[in-house]
Image (cartoon, rainbow, N blue to C red; front, top):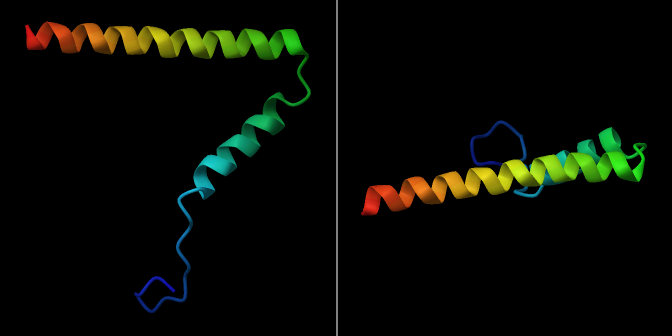
Length: 63
């Protein structure tokens, strides 16, 4: 119970990440290895670019 008297249970903090992981596995499970590597490379490069841009912006505000 969540303490509000509605008989609803709270989701654990791991429900959303596990659901996202399951969705990714279903969406990309049947793809060949080269396609998975390409998608992972694109997502990784966007992540690195975002981190670098954020760090540059943070350093320019400090100085």
